[in-house]
Image (cartoon, rainbow, N blue to C red; front, side, top):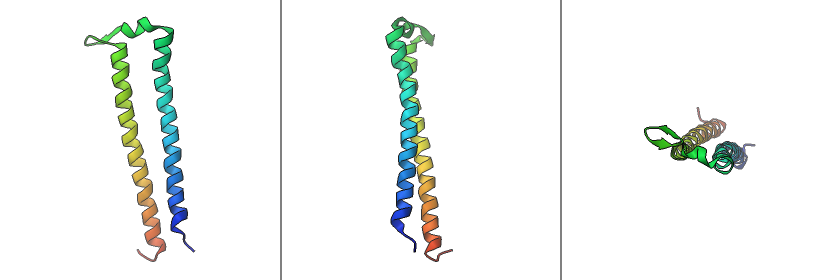
Length: 95
């Protein structure tokens, strides 16, 4: 027999797995920022473009990267939930 909770658990496990992968990816990029600050802080003063130094560009890049990851996470999770809802509908005798 079909169990709604097992399908919900699969979606939840998917969301957690994707979230953990994304936070690890973000942590690695952020770790690069920290390593530069610790090992060569003067490098952060180097002008990259438009009068902005590496610290500002990297910091803004981190924020933008986090937003991109959030949009990707939302898209992937929404797609998985829609698939789960479609499976639930078809198993209940719908289309």
